[in-house]
Length: 401
Ligand SMILES: *Cc1c(COP(=O)(O)O)cnc(C)c1O
Image (cartoon, rainbow, N blue to C red; front, side, top):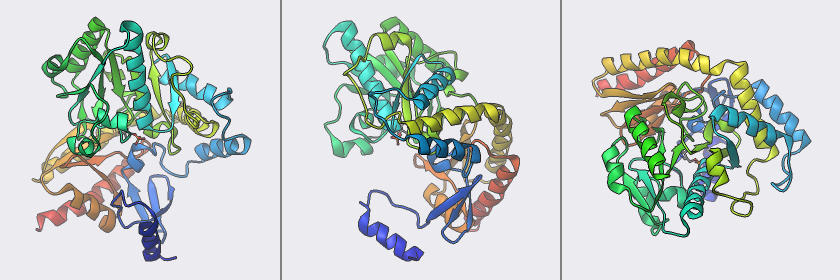
């Protein structure tokens, strides 16, 4: 089949739930993707913040191939070594005490919400427990995770969703207090809002929320599905704040391309919430995906990846700041580490499309006006320079208009 026929077949058979770009990616090498005609594209999206080590990493492929040949599934009725090793490494990296592996970010949120509800049920008995979530947040597309997602147009067609969710303004502690009731059992937020437009939590805000949670025995759930796994320069973004969540969710880059997520809890939460029979998953934490997680953590250490991210981020930020200075239609930059956004007054969808189709540069949007950049964590200065060259060519076409 040629490209046109492939796309026709896709549209004939796939439920049209995505508006896909007319590109067929076939394979990748390093930070470049290749289409079916072997044409290269520079990837500054990493899937959506998934491919931390880029493509075709031999250490990663070796670990997965070895596991593939041993065993890929056993069920959660038994122990297996990849899960044991992955759990030990995730506990250490996250600073949390116990982990539960899921298949996705949304399922990690589901588990976090159930854990918070069970915690309140155990402590206070049956009740209509409420959750405070943030406006402009994104937590996933399942019914539970959608219930705490702060974008009304994502939620509206699916009402009634989970009851008892109140939305506060992110980084506005007064708004949290205004939504607090005797029935509040948890406060959920992204440490750095991703889809909503690259907004990091303010230090003071997060520390006040933490204090409130301590005083009221409310659980603080930090969703680091996107901003976790080294993206911001620390293993988890909360580690750059002087606080710790009660529940932490992680996914996206956790498996570097295989579907896996997790929710992590403190000992206190583990001892007072879910027990055998309360929760489960068929695939979650299977040997293949947990072997990937285990290998990902080993590679973070072997490659000194956090050091690398801390070193390359200022270079990347400088290039972005120069773009802000150069083009009138870029009004600012927001983000942390290798999770960056440029705020545009020109249509971001047009920029993303032009970058992809004309310059072979893969970038993302966030919100309605942010060009979102989530490059592989292994990018070099040379890759950043290539990005600069390509994105300037795209931006230049908007000046001529
Ligand atoms: C992507 C994302 C999710 C949902 O993860 P899926 O794997 O798509 O279900 C949840 N929270 C945040 C912050 C995300 O960026």
